Length: 356
Image (tube, rainbow, N blue to C red; front, top):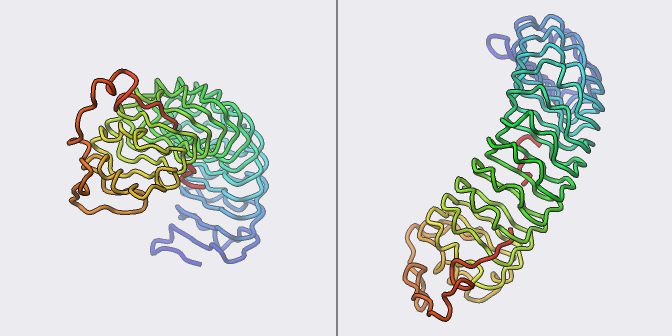
């Protein structure tokens, strides 16, 4: 058991407590951490009017209750408990972070009428949620985590169009419909779904990071307008070519375990002047004896990492392999609209859930 010098923080995590006892409850507490115990009920918090953070992660709690007096609460963590529904949050108007991941929640409810007008981060990963709903009265929401649920359709996000991070990995989503309203979105996680394309992202020009690995994505063309994109994770898809020339802000490009077999499929990579990292391990191309030399000759000088290998700060193309900038121009027979660097039909997680 530990309290800080001003007795505002109390931590009794991992001590096999079966209940919230009187010794934990002090009127001057601002933080109470009781993770990894055996607590079954939220109780005895009536006098904690200054409490700002309550962490009850990994207990045995089945119901959210007993928080009426915690009117200054900013963060509530109930990750990995036994909750089946969202309730008991009324009056927590200062709440900014709510983590209910790894529970048994089947529906998003109990939020709209609770007055959570300052809630910025909502984590509902690894529950039993099949429908996105119940988000209408969360005007300050900026991060929404719904990974590892049973969601098939992206919908009902019109009232949370200010969200900047949306995590939907490990669901059953087959199309990226329903995102047109999310114009503030900077980070999108849709790894491990059932996607065949990235159609539906064309208008989300604020996007900076996309995590869409472990799908069946066959093309990247719809990303051309996303010029702010700096991280693109498309490993374990069905890409055979890589259309990336318009993505001039790109720094991280993950393409490992795609059926990319020809160097010509990567010609547009040479135009990414800010590219620092590229992963191609597991592609048929990576099995070729000259794989490393070929990619280094093709890649821009900004590249600092190929797969797991950190590259020397200064590098020159191996003998016999011209760099991309020194490569001879294609002959007229090869440089028509269907050949050369401008032709590449492309194919493009947990996320990582920040908190799951």
